Image (tube, rainbow, N blue to C red; front, side):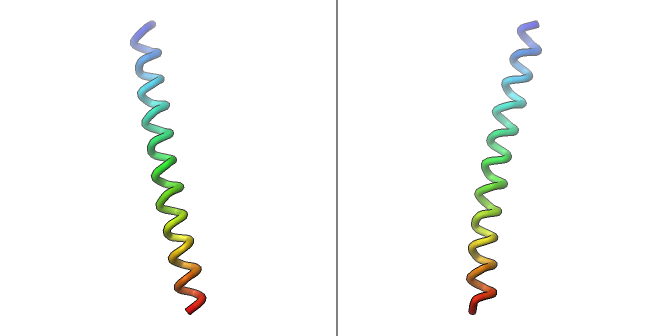
Length: 39
């Protein structure tokens, strides 16, 4: 039972870390795209 909780926690941390980087890169891409389309 403990292993299941540990796997769930690892999956949760990995998913939150992955989604954080996705949002970060999407923010940079959107900012760069708006600057590119303005010029």
